[in-house]
Amino acid sequence: MNDKKIQTLDEVRAFLDGTTDIEFSIEGKDERYQWIRKTLVRFNYLCLSRGECGVVLRYLERVSGYSRQTVTRLVAQYRKTGKIQRHQRTVMGFQLYYTTQDAQLLAELDELHGTPCGAAAKKLCERMYRVHGDARFEHLSHISVSHLYNLRHSTGYQRQRHHFDKTRPTRSQIGQRRKPNPKGQPGYLRLDTVHQGDLDGIKGVYHINAVDEVTQFQCVFSVERISERFMIPTLKEIMVTLPFPILGFHADNGSEYINRTVAKLLNKLTIEFTKSRPRQSNDNALAESKNGSVIRKHLGYDHIPGGWAPQLNDFHRRHFNPYINFHRPCLFPVPHIDRKGRVKKRYPYEEMNTPYDKLKSLHKADTLLKPGITFEQLDAIALAISDNEAAKQMNEAKRKLFKTIFEQNK
Image (cartoon, rainbow, N blue to C red; front, side, top):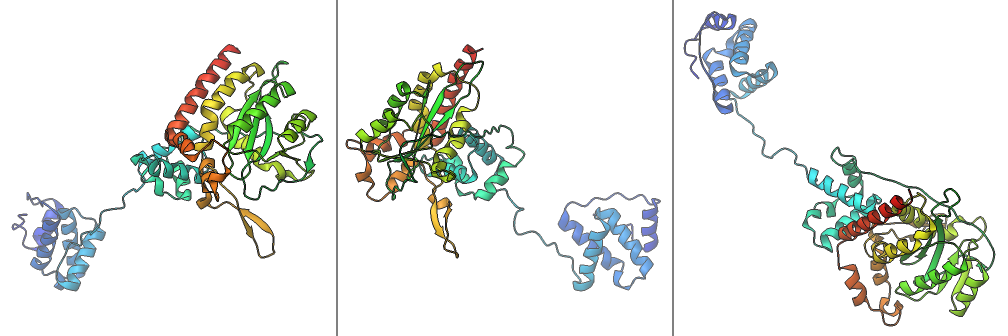
């Protein structure tokens, strides 16, 4: 900086009025600060009158390029200490821990798994990093459920969302009217039927939804009609598919389950047969909740003719049932007694697991499996592919199947 031509306040005023021709430059912040201090010393700032101080301040603003507030602060520092020091930040500015790439990764995971609840999405991120070794999910494996929802509201995330709703049950007679009591042992199934709707007099396919109460192992199969001809083979296949023996069978009052043929089959296998009580909507709530969160979410509401049941069952066996049992986390209830002695259910995040992991965590789990089935065999299925890869394969198979169905039904 070379401003030796300006030595008096009159020369400063001339400069401010634009009548003095001076050329100078200041290189950096440190030089600027030193120049301000030297200028204050040169004009003996502390002894100037109020008006003269204003002239010097205007001069400092013009040359330094600082605002009035900044110049005033620096002059106050000089007045107090006799020096002007630069106070640099010792840390960098706030850095984003969860980046745009993390938000996009979460969006991809949600798209694959059908936008699960926050806790389920967090568990999937943890599994992708810890179980399947995908390093991209390292940040997301530590995310809280509440902040996961913040990421879902971020600008780069909100693009590809789809949601679906519910179905309903029916009624009839046979079996014991009571709520089953599995006592922590797998094998007590809750069953319900989901109808894919009728169109122009053509009956839609029916989905049979069987859920184990303790582990939430789930089997989904489709039938053309809810009659003995189709239901009995399907119920037998459900019993074969599950890795543990069936001990109980609970349904609502629908005639597809509450009939003599089904009762005869269950009696032959010594399986307990119960049905929902009137005005007790929670008796079959587990199966009904899975109707919405699993079947409607993935299979939708559009009409599918009953003749497509074999193709749907092939999809269920190859992709859908393995995905929901080995790769889809579920919340599990923990009973809690409040101050009034009432038992309430809580669903802590720590208890969230896939149905298969829940089965493995049970006491003496090896003794609960069917003869000839081992956890080594089941581990090979569970760890063969990652959760995301299972979802990709399931979604791709579903897309091809639905494309075939809806193109041929036009």
